[in-house]
Amino acid sequence: MITANRSIVRLQPAIRHTLKYSSLTSIKSYHHRKMSQPVTITYTQERKKELTAQYTHINQLIQTEQEKKNQNEHVLLLPVSKLKPASDIKILYDTLHIKEFGENYVQELMEKSKLLPNDIKWHFIGGLQTNKCKDLAKIPNLYCVETIDSLKKVKKLNESRLKFSEDADPINCYIQINTSNEEQKSGLHEENEIFEIVEYFLNKDGKEKPLMLNLVGLMTIGSWNVSHQVDHDKDNEDFTALANWKSKIDSKFGTDLKLSMGMSADYKQAVRQGSTEVRIGTDIFGNRPPKDEAKII
Ligand SMILES: *Cc1c(COP(=O)(O)O)cnc(C)c1O
Image 1: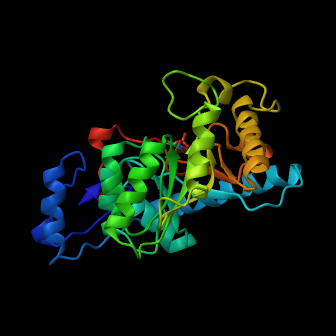
Image 2: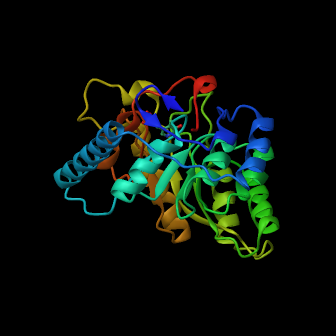
Image 3: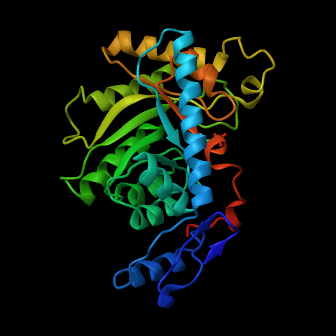
């Protein structure tokens, strides 16, 4: 099957069909087929060159920003591969040995995780729904969930991970903070709620054991307006707010939280303001197709 001239994927004749993760039935039948039919993921040299160059370029820009601020803490460049084909992920995995990727949709992540090598460390960065926690928790190599925004969901995720397997690797978690107080944005901004979740993670009350989750940091999505401000030398107020939350929580609980902040439009600023992880989609993979046109292979 050829998707434009970006990626070529050869399937065994028996499973030569288009997969769309919007349909649950196609996924079930796909998994059924997969038992007997391996899927080979291939790509063009052209796409390989393109993606490798883009990733390397952004990594260099991140280093340049760090040097400006004399920062030498490691900044993870997380490629956000949502709505992009598995072959794009495979390119970065094969050529640059990138092992961590970000995805937004549970269904898509479930499919990709079955197709791609199992030493990939998946980050879930999409809106978290209580009723999807169960499916998420069943992905063995789910490494990180960056969008924790309620105690109820944390508990559900923990419970689901335990049910899936007590030997599963714990999931690293970020609490998502709504730093811009925009109504439509998810994330927390009430101190009580945030502290309550931190306490749960630190398991101070000792009630919920074993805990299959680790608290590693805080995450925010900068507001569009601020991220596109003309004066790029000015601090981004969303990132300032997230860094302030870190100081507050670290000093109260003795933690040393990481900061997941910065996307294609605002990652340089985020790095200057102490980000330890930037989540980049467009600047690495190019524009995304509409959800109903996206193909996994
Ligand atoms: C899509 C997405 C990104 C990547 O966005 P780009 O602007 O394409 O770099 C980063 N973080 C989150 C939470 C996203 O949903």
